[in-house]
Amino acid sequence: MAGLDLSLIASQAFTGLGLGVIFVLLAVGLSLIFGLMGVTNFAHGSLYMLGAYFSFSLLAFTGNFWVGLVGGALLVAVLGIVTEVVLLRPLVGRSSDHPLLLTFGLSLVLVEAVRLVWGKAGLELNTPTSLSGAVNLGFMFFPQYRLFVIAVTALSLLALWLFLTRTNVGLIIRAGTRDPLMVRALGFNFNAIRTIVFGIGAGLAGLAGALVGPLGGVYAEMGINIIIESFVVVVVGGMGSLLGAVVAGLLIGEVVSFTTLFAPKFSHLSVFIVMAVVLILRPSGLFGESGLME
Image (tube, rainbow, N blue to C red; front, side, top):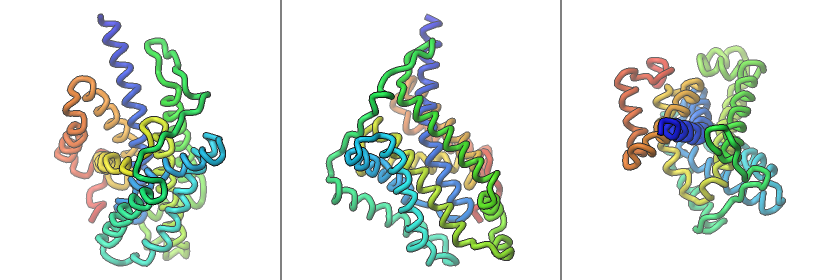
């Protein structure tokens, strides 16, 4: 019986990891954008949804899952770049409420646009045959595609870390999150840096959507619930903290997974309970800085 319990716990832990990495991709994008631009991007969930739809269309057009996966994320990144240049850049210097309201309105527009283009009915994004089986981990059989999602997330985070720490642009981005005025004073094109960051954040959301498509289907409302939970992850980790987004994303994934096992009715509520406890004990989040949002 003890062996069975251990196997069940391990199974839930891996399930939570599979959910947590999706939270991580979304929360890292949100934190990156907020850390540099101070923008709370309410359109992030819609960008996540678009990643799934773009992936579906590219897969239907090319018949190649990999083209759909990579292309879906890149198309969302391009859309993010256009959004920053056309819509957000004119709001620089205004109240922080303006970009917040703009991105909220944009999220509604994107949802309606998707319904017009792809229809109101949900779509099915098939898992490639090469990733449709299960892997024997010794204590359980775990879906191969979910392991693929975990691996892609890990590689994406590694690539982002290398970009931010080993490239000149990455170093400018990190400096800009600390002192944007100094970055401008040194003569760097801060507008271009903002555009790059928003594009990266949007691309991470699109990648998350493309990865989730084969797991839960593709539908216009798929970004609504997960964006709320992703904002919780950002708050728990600390606004603007990338390390906090990673740690909190994995934590929330595990909390949801084990709550679903032991108390399914409280699975959604558990996310907010964790947030409340963290904010009571540490108001700035696990890795946040006091006063960052002021």
